[in-house]
Length: 271
Image (tube, rainbow, N blue to C red):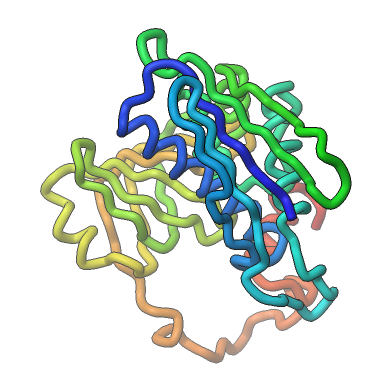
């Protein structure tokens, strides 16, 4: 069993408290997905200490035994997931690039945890991990602005130009700033899309559908799209509505790879 502890010091508002718990839970879920291919661990509240600092501890327990085709997974993955979270945050704090198990959403949530620190609010955010099977010694990590800066270096927009992005439209947000997110068809990364009010009905109608969005596209240092100031939304046909047979095409053009993998390898210069 693995225990994760969140420590918050300073003036803790209800909203900051909610954001802290939500962002930590998102990191745990995203790393679980990377490790197990799903949701293998349930995190239950094990300890709660009020006051300043506020200390909350969750213990991981297996949801059920999981296996996948290429390997058998151990019954309790909470130590693997918990240690991946702590070591990944340590790597970000040191500015050593993307942790292997951290998706874009996990990086965003980690940065939001670090951003909770405010001069007249929360003064410190710390994460502690404890593997009860091997040692009682806790690993403790304070999250600082260095984490947020490291996340920005990895996935922050660096260049902008007129362009388009194809993906599945999800996560429409209309509280204050109006935007939605699409998941890029090639890289699988989350792309935030700001939209004018007049395009909101079209975005709602295309929810959970494949779309092309056109406008000002901002890309990260690797050239992956991260943000679009949307000027146009075009809904695409569902995959089962597309032609299922193509004639006159070189059958071995991609050397047996699916199209997304082939494009990635070409982009990286490996094909």
